[in-house]
Image 1: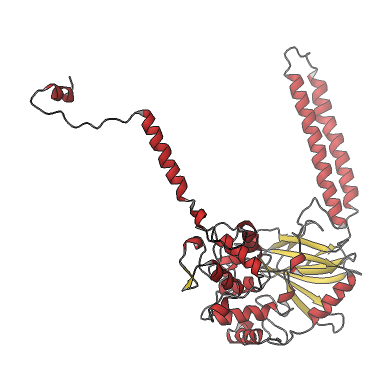
Image 2: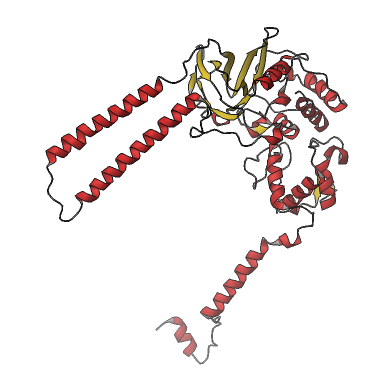
Length: 313
Length: 144
């Protein structure tokens, strides 16, 4: 599915959700009003610089244009924005699909509840949601303060260690919306992106059911060898692959890593070559990331490991 | 009176050697020639081997397949990996992958299936089509 993906949208000016619609309108109205006032002031300036300008009555201008006009304009804008803000989607988890998102330096852990078994399903750096349905994201941070911002869908919400915050999202139509950490969180803050993928409801159900399954046994010999390499290299010290090895989840769950759009939190498009390069030396691509560079792993094994991860769909 | 004038007026002492200053016009011509020579230095592209591919398309493919995850390529934004060798002067290399002659047919075959040409290599088979490999080769030969 990677081939058909166009450049995902990360823009306040192209709203695709109810809240983003309101925020986009704020941006345009405030910009428009600001531009009009700026033009009016410039026009007055030109008038005042005319050589034979009529003498003014300063008292009238100070009281009228300096006090009364701003009070009226700002009151109108304040009233309008308060009225519009009241129409933002209420932040409540009732009747919404609940998804837990934990921000870490520098990636996003995303957890769903399997509707069939009630068990938790972990994935990373990608929040898949059903289009046209309200989604409640329970937000938390594991290390420092982060902030979730998907401009095309909603406003920002801080993610604070030891404290649960929430964000209600709703994408009206299927699509891919890029998001970004919006609170400086360390060296790789700029490489802490995620994608919200809104799917048609039936597609979403199918995707969730697939994510709930443990990893399938590889069908070919190269990925088969790759699975052995995964265990030999003790990748399971940080990464879980359900059905193969469990870990304490210092790094992203890789059970279905092949089904994700990107790796490294929006760093590289996900395919075998990118996986191999990332495993070989994450420090060259995302300096400071907590994953160490591969050492003592020969080329063939690296290749096999990348092939194995690629087919974990 | 200056030293040199006195010397030249002396009938016993020979004229000291004084190089003739080239005229301003001659200097301009020489400078233009030097510039032309310098400009020609970078244009070995005329000798780029024929690959049957298009370099601009190749550059796009190199970006799309993220060769930069392993290779540093100055022409490609974000290509800063260090798992493989840098490709900065790829077009000048005589050999690739430690001993394979850097010729279009070999390069295309290498891009299509590296482990088949050199068992044990860390470079994966990316599932390129032959035409994609030709485009990439065309781009790689522009890196000089």
